[in-house]
Image (cartoon, rainbow, N blue to C red; front, side, top):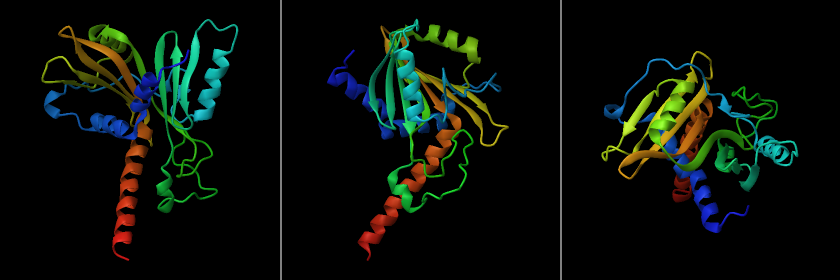
Amino acid sequence: MILSKKQVLFFETLTDRNHMKKYLVFLLFLVPGLLSAQTEMPNSLDGFAEASWGMTFESIREKFLSMATNPESKEKIELLNEKKEESLLIKRNGIFYLYRFYKTPELLKEVRPKREGTAETDPSIDGQTEFRENGILFSVGVTFNLVPTDKIKEKMEKKYGKPRKESIGDDKVSGAAIWELVERRENPPRGGFAVVWREGYKKAPYTRRIDYFSANLKEVIAKDYVDFFSVQETKTLRDLIP
């Protein structure tokens, strides 16, 4: 299957760093007045399907290529689009899966140079240093045809329990529900978040998209963004005041 330019641009937009930053902020700062909370979650979210958080771009790409070309496979799998070390768009049995990968911005070499022989602080990433040269999996976005949100939530609750947080927009239809599936007794915390997005269709809540995020790598990315903008400010001041 060949994607149209419009379709490719749409899915590339979902991987845009500004959009990812918006999602991370959403997870951390939902308006308190719109939240309902559940005190405990049943298990941790350590990845998505066959992929674990922190797996490299190449390892997941090879996995799907092997599955797609396996003549004994009963699934229909297509690799539709890829941006090396950034994203893989997979169509699997009629559903789109956008695997998102993260590597340290080049600009951070100035504040966090690669140090040979230094162990990575994230145990899920073997053989790397604080400067992540290879894209590692931190999120998966699932896109499908519109389904009533109640049916999606029912299936999610059977697997994960009640959502940790829920937000409803002023229109009483749009919003999102968040499952926080994190084992915080471990350091760094293990697990992740699942976000079911809802939108209005025929004046009722429907869902066409679910996003999954690594809890640990979300924190890594948040720290990197702080350092990234700090470096930009320092460079600007240095150039302005010789």
